[in-house]
Amino acid sequence: MNLKNIVIILDHPDEPRNIGAACRAMANNDIKELRIVGRREDYDVEKVHTLAIHAAYIFDKASFYDDINAASADCTLSAGTTRRRGKNRKGKLLLPQEFAEQADLITGSSCDEIAPDGAPGDYAASSTEAETKGGKVAVIFGNERTGLTDEQLDMCTLGVAIPSSKEFGSLNLSHAVQIICYHLFCYQSEKKGMLKGFTPLTLQRLDKTVTCIADNLQKIGFFKITGRPDMEQFWRSILARAALSESEAQYIEKTFTKMAGLAGKKKEE
Image (cartoon, rainbow, N blue to C red; front, side, top):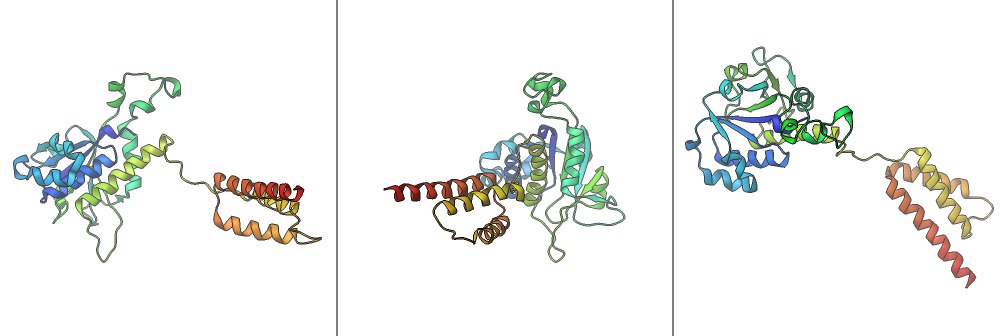
């Protein structure tokens, strides 16, 4: 996914501080293009900058338009965000992660993902060409009080809904921007291998750690004639529930190995 091709559109936002917070949310997720349906002179720049902090440049470079159609005219896809469902509200509403998949198909790849013959690091095009590859995708957020009306949603090509409580489903504007941008950022990061997550050890690998523990306990005379099988079963159950990582398992193995070594050295002395 090319995040440079993601466009955030705010339709007549009321509160300038919400705009600033939205800018910060965008910057957190490497999304920089902001468009606002409304007039720049209607917003207190100082209040925008107060919450935008180091992302104030996003508002300073923002473009202003008369309506959603004008703001999204150069985009291939425009997604309207809404929590309300109904026959006049795009029928099926995508979840943020489903929308990220759609956006990825359209926006193309960023410059550090493009390489001839799939070879990483060797770019088939210049950085500028690579960064502009693909079409633009707009995400439209409605006014804080009303959200997107049916008429405004009709100007979008699809709808996106963020699941929230039935008792209190309304999200702050900047929070909604953060959630959508985060899903887009994570989708790109996962494709680039930047988000590998945590993979706990398999039981087969865990048995190696259990054997190491038991072997070293045996070296220091912990077991008599019997007792090792029960001890191995104990450690296997405990460590399986702990969902160890590879580095954690290695640390435990080194601890018991060093313990047995120190005990042997002391015995010799």
